[in-house]
Amino acid sequence: MTRLRTPTLLVAFVGLLLVSIVAASFIGTASIEAQDVLSVVLRRLGLAAIAPGPPVSPLVDALIWESRLPRVLLAGTVGLGLSISGAVLQSVTRNPLAEPYLLGVSSGASTGAVAVMILGFGSGAVTLSAGAFVGALVAFAIVLLLIGGGRVSNPARVVLTGVLVSQFFSAVTSLVLMLDGDADATRGFTYWLLGSVGGARWEPLQVAATVILLGSLACLVFTPALDAFTFGWDTAASLGIDVTKARVTLMVLAALITAAAVAASGAIGFIGLLVPHVVRLLVGQSHRLLLPLSGLGGAVFLIWVDTFARSAFSPHEIPVGVITALLGAPVFAIVLRKAAHR
Amino acid sequence: MTTTVLSARDIAWSVGGTRILERVSLDAYAGRVLGIIGPNGAGKTSLLRILAGLRRPEAGSVRIGGVDLGRVRRREVARRLAIVEQSPEVHADISVEETVALGRTPHRTAFAPLDGRDREAIESALALTGMGLLRSRSWQTLSGGEQQRVQLARALAQEPDVIVLDEPTNHLDIRYQLDVLALLRSLDVTVVTALHDLNLAARYCDQIAVLHDGGLRAIGMPEAVLSPELIRSVYGVEAVVEHSPHTGSPLITYVRTV
Image 1 (tube, chains in turn green, red):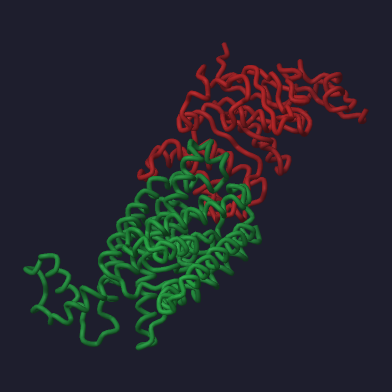
Image 2: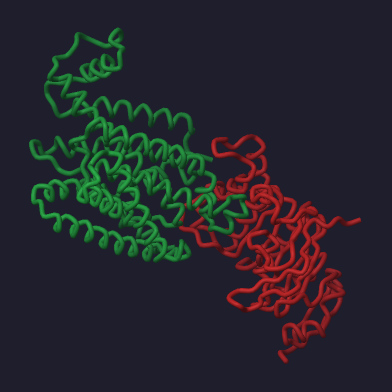
């Protein structure tokens, strides 16, 4: 059925993720080594007895625990969430080009988050995520309305609708920022809107990780529906799927995951397109495998892209969304070309 | 003698104020092939969707094994009834084997891998439809006829009591048309199928139901139903109906339109 054995692949991807987390936590700083990362993590978790080597200096400890680790984990969490969200959206819209960023869902989430901050509901991780969730749902609802609830299956038309909604919401976001008129805040937001996991802290990370992990696990329950949608709604229903319930639930979950990711790191594009399509080449169409592997693969992918973004042009740091767009655009072109031939 | 597996009573259905079906009643018997014929727009596809429980009729009811379809959970229906639609639009790059495995959906849970039972059903469906050698091929590279057979294999992997098919011989070479219909006949499954070709319907169906203008014009054995008068009034074609000495079935020769 699958081209490689399932447990082997899952174990390999989990292993790759763990290695990536440790490696990305010390790469780019000459004075830190892998052993230091393990030492800090184990001591902080109260496992000093099995921690390797002597305790590191307080400075290194703070660098790893307060700055690097949250950043790496946030990159992993966001990469996981956006990849799963992309794979889910591709199935529930029956469109290979669907992706939170391209459908305008991320843009709606950004508007929601910015509105919450500017309107003074506070900038805590929970309120930001809630605002982003409302924005994401509204944007998604508009896309669905414009494409007739999924009856339109022409991929190009769905993406054009996404472009429209995306542009509309970024205009709203700009308008809100301009009216607010605080130049410093605007600059900060602009950087955030490009998509970046720099400046990650534990508190927002916990909110994002909780929502994204629970949302992703909930999506796994619907993998039979995601598979069955391949041949259309009627065939899915004839396979025993409650189509309306499954679609609505999955769309809300995808919006929720996207919102949590955007609230924490801004709108990072193309991961949801790039990662699931590459994983499909490896394991085929079955979502039982595609979904978890896209999540793990997306986490590894964004961790390394972020590592590159912060260290390749040091001391300059590039927003990670810029790099994912550079990598994602060609993949988009390939998928669009293939879709147009069908 | 024969048990009724699927039965429809007084089905009515309309779309946007236009009546599509009106008081249609029919029974499908265990292990038999029921053909539904009629001109384009007669309501065949709508009737099949209602029989398969994909649409709720406005009036009337459909029963499977004596139980109202509306009262059975979708998953339960899917274990007993499979449907093969006409050429669905597919964007995914899915393989033949993955497609056939979809037929196991109502028999598995989200976290259960395919077990021995599932694999057996998939293998037997691939073998029956002659798609075993093409198992790794992508759906996108298959001919229309091959796609039709893969869909049938998916329905067989579902191991249903009833298979509902919408023009399963469309796009098929004559050889595969005969193969598919002979296969459907040989199965120990109740088959309800829309068909275009009256001669094939006469040859392979145990019963034929004739739809015309949303109503059931006739139902019964092919010999009883397919008369020159019926063909003339339903299709507007003058035809001669003979008894084929080669197959023993009615043989229809179309003479001219009237």
